[in-house]
Length: 363
Image 1 (cartoon, rainbow, N blue to C red):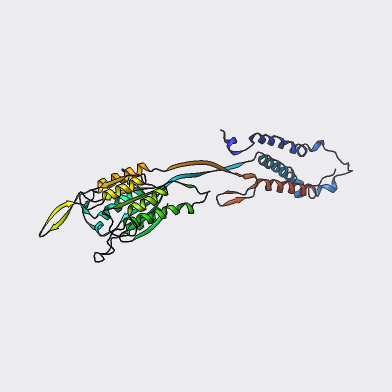
Image 2 (cartoon, helix red, strand yellow; image 1 turned 60 degrees about the vertical axis):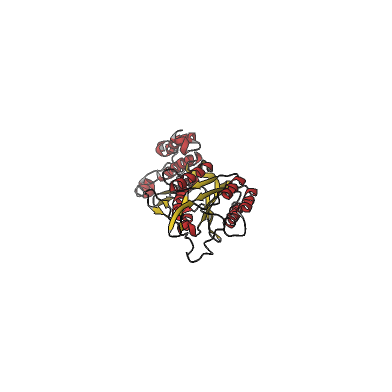
């Protein structure tokens, strides 16, 4: 595609400028004009120096410029403004994170082998799940992601949103209850799952038909390190509600294989207390999977697997919006010029005024 084809709708119309020299023929060929005979020129010699006699070329110049601009306007100059419309068929994800007292146990380890609490390990991996870590997790910038945390009671820290900066700030501020508040340190898995299901169900009400985001599927990622010790709803009842709404619930049990337990004056290793069977049934009833994370590395692998199972489809459409330059004001840096069509009409008006006043000729 040539430059002219890109800039003008009818580039062949520019050939019209070839008629411009015709407007100069009468002015240049003044000797062939009709004349009025006078007996002498003495009365005209004093007028020879008047500016009007020397500036008669202005009239054909105005007409020439007007015609050239009209030819350009007929060719329809335009400016293309490329725009992109992205239609996202994404995932609505509600992260449900346990913050009960046991999540403060320091039995997970970071990459350098230093101890960290279970909650800190979860924060680290969930952050990578949302924003990416340049390794196993790519991040999910195009998904609606929300956050529900729970201990004795569930709290929605962030509804599903694409504002992941706010989401990660909310995650960073999550803390376990005070050690002195035993009641608050209990675990209400069913209530948290029920609230998360309700939050993710309401997303459709906030999206209009013209929205560029279409919900492909609704997903809950539930992470806990124990079993249900409080709450009004059981995890399995909440799973039935989620399944009826088409919401998948991926469940993660985040505890080491064994934990230290004090017996008298000594300690011994015992299996970590976690209701894996219930978590497995919750995932199965909603068409999802259950995972067991025993350390930070396995927790990262689990979120990476969930990341691969639930992916977003992005349909990118590029299109061009054209501005008709013939009828629009044109800017070059800080200087703005009127539309070419307006300038052409102005030149024609000036030419008409001049030839009928100062530059009027007889005959």
